[in-house]
Image (cartoon, rainbow, N blue to C red):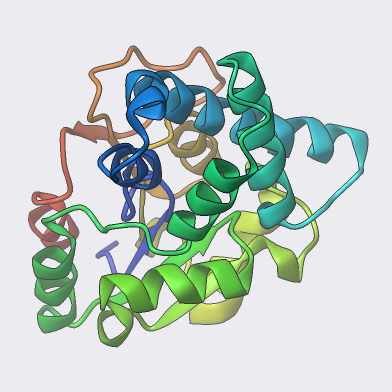
Length: 228
């Protein structure tokens, strides 16, 4: 069955989640933070994701902005910078202005030219996603931005992946689902989507019931895969 619909995770897939910490580290007066920023960026992202999974299991849903703040607070404290309120505020501000990876606009434009539906499916809250899409200037290249807030649970709950078929009226076999999160790509494969794991770091495949159909090191090859 041909691919009609291309669905993308947002954070880490279209948008560089390390950009906020990297940008702050380059600002004058943040020399101490500059020595810690790679570790903080990594720990921030890890805790942000862990809190989504834990809250889903516990049935204690909050918006993605809350787990983003909670993850940052943990990371800053872990690196001995928990008392820097100005740094915390600046990092959170920059998270609303994340950079898209450089290949994203061209890749999405190629999909639209080929007649594919394109959308984001993200744990992010609608206002966060709106800010990121506008900051990256890719709104015109997306048909929709789908958030887990409409179902009140984070990925990889199956009800989140249901949103794609509900919005676009497509079968799972018509969907190319793209994520930089290995666990997300595995879960989407188990759901029945055609899946691509954008494995920028060269990590091993997660030991889960299903595995991604393909791996890429960036998003530039997505239009060719969507054409079949």
